[in-house]
Length: 73
View 1 (cartoon, rainbow, N blue to C red):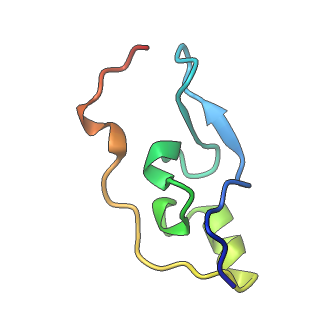
View 2 (spheres, rainbow, N blue to C red):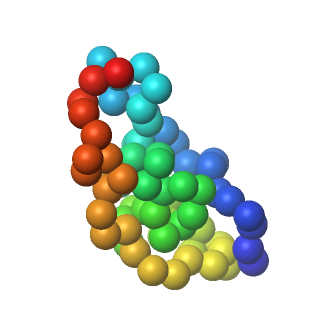
C-alpha cells in the first residue's frame, strides 16, 4: 500500500522551540521525515510497524534537515 504522505506518527516539540517538531520514537525532525517512511530511522518503531502492515518503505534517513540552521526561533 502507498499513501501520498504519512503524518500519523507520534510527535514531540523541541524544548524551547515553538514550531520545531520531531518523531517521538526515533527523534528525527519532521522536516527531515517530510511525510515519508524513508525519513524515519530504519529502526524506528513507527516505520517498522508500518512496514509490517504492508506500507511501502524504502531508503533510509541519512542527514537531518537542520544541519545548517540555528537552534532558536
